[in-house]
Amino acid sequence: MRQAGIWLARVKELRGDKLELNWRSFALEQVNARDEPGWKAWEQGPEYVSRGLLPLRGGVAARKQGEEAHFNYMFALLEAKHVEREDIRTSEAVIEIAESAGLDVPRFASDIDDPATLDQVVRDHESAAEQGIFGTPTIVFEDGFAIFLKMYTPPENETMSAFEHFIGLARGRKYFGEMKRPQPPWPRGVFDD
Image (cartoon, rainbow, N blue to C red; front, side):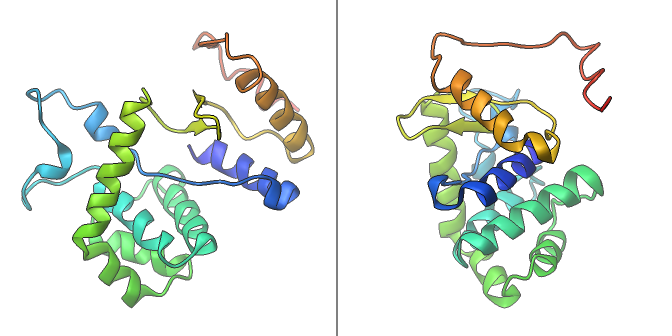
């Protein structure tokens, strides 16, 4: 997710208003739940320690402060989780991430506690599930066609060519359902430049 996010941020910078990035919530813990049928992560009591609902609620709260604030929050969150390997499941951690991203922290803290943020996470997740989405990042095009993407960030000088190839394959060739490199050896060779 972080790798694709960095790449798409570069593309957005180069394409400006020609590309709209619209991040939405998707609860992987719900998709990966092995509990009884009908179990919902968002219906658990206060004793339940969710792996991702609080950071997702933070995304909704950050979005209320504008696109730039949301973007900054998402990158700070992904950096904390995937690079710094921080535990992001607590209110304190999520608020600290919001502060590092330059958000209005009192407003963020109020919005994250608002039950409407959880309602939005649920709506986003259920909408994605109805579309057959199973993981992140999944890119959904304006025509509703979606594709899951697992990648490393391309070198900066390949930002646009990688994007154009991706669009041509992912959007223009809808008859490709899945392509996957054997693991291992992938990602061997990715960093050889």
